[in-house]
Length: 196
Length: 193
Image (cartoon, rainbow over all chains, first blue to last red; front, top):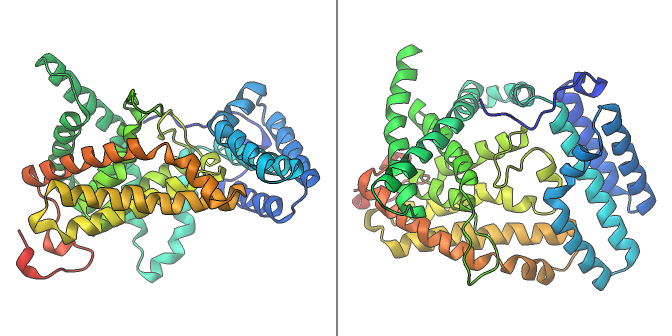
């Protein structure tokens, strides 16, 4: 099982259910995007900052959440400054920072398994429309188990090629990897069908 | 949908994660690092076909949203979907579907050229047609500005479409996966392999 982005803790946020947090995130995002005021956006950002502190997260984790979007955000802010007004640029940066940080907070305080379980519960009413929730659960749990295995096979294929004195190129790596996965699929499917 | 289909969908979602762990390729002619991950939708659609390919990308996106750090560079979680470039992530589902649809159409006489066109149509043209308006809409910048910012990635994506096309053609020869009954819309039976 690979490690998720969840950070263990015992705060009220950690104990809140996944569905509640997702709903709160959607409401927060809707509110933030429907009011075009830098003051409201700054208030939202402060609220999120307070929630990080309440969840026991410091500045390092807080800033790490912003890193993946920082470059795009700076570029967009520069474009806004050039094409529009400084207040528009400020609104954009504040809104995205608040939204990205809020979404990151849900991820940090909710286990992957809880989020997946919440998704499955939400999908179960759709079973009447012909959606097979059992198969969705199977796909999710299989994929989570396959991720380390596929990474392992990829490393093996790479090592085998280096041992044969070949410099592994993307195609010479991907093709044997995929063929091995396709062969595995038949065996795994037979094993699952035999057990059920 | 058979158990085998479910297993294939899960395996290609996992392959997508493995591609994200590949070290990015630096090509001297272009300054942008080329990550292997965006080859994933092209490969999934081109090898599994439209429906299973798109479902494997949907599964991958769900796992990222559920908090697994599977995007290249170890990124993941809900924050990615709140950011301005989320259109490119959601676009992978459509990209795999479109690539699969074109590959299914040319399945009987699939060549490198048709596979490349399929990968480029889905994994570049359609993906940018979703990702660029998304940036423009949520970032409040004109389409042209968003397009200019994204253009730097096109040379790398063309290389990836070429690599994916080569892989699709080679895997088809070694292990053909798309059969008549797997196709999204049943094509005339005379082009069945």
